[in-house]
Length: 260
Image (cartoon, rainbow, N blue to C red; front, side, top):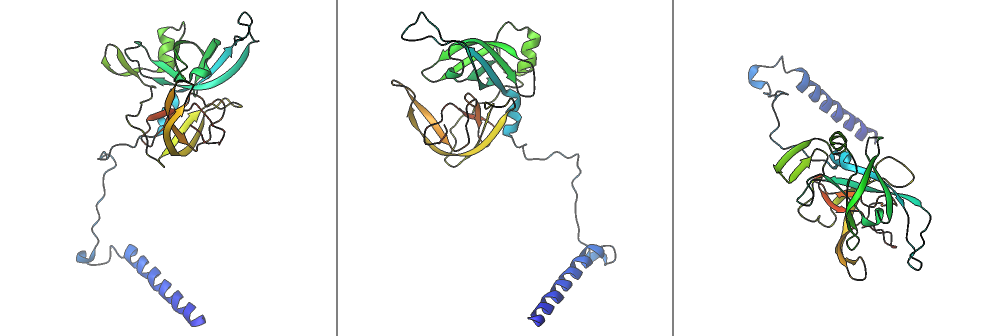
């Protein structure tokens, strides 16, 4: 054993000496033995496109604070006491539906709302908002700022960076929607404002299933099932694919602890 160890140490010493020789003798060896190296100036731009990260979408995610009063179905002339809840939403680009940027969230987040306030990630200012589209059959809703000046709109949505037509404007903080569904076992990231805190939370998971689910007695929705942690308050938050595009909206957590 001792001989073997000595032999190994000798070999390691030989390798170490060879490494030192290669680094230290570059100036002493003849020109034909020098290793030719090339360096790329730091000012030369890279030919490969920059990698899109889902982290760049944090500015477009906002916390939604709702004050609600529920109507009693059995006694519609009575109402329940006012309660408060919170959820998540994110900015999308203006479309032909409205010549302004909008906030997409779940319908159940703003259900029976009497007052809605939105606050962007990284900001302490809360803006009043109102519902302009309410679609409980697909559990989606569109919000816009309420009674805000152009300066307030610019502060919340950011500058317009692209304008392809008079009715299609893309703000700086608008998130881009994906054109195709993610693949099975593909990594996704979910952003939201879970209850119990006021800061944004990012969780990672993989796509385990893509299937049709019963959203109600009369509606079937295409749902993506993931294993990322989704807590109360994450509803309405975006799910990003590996390209940094939104592939879905967090809306449901089933009893088997698999999130959708």
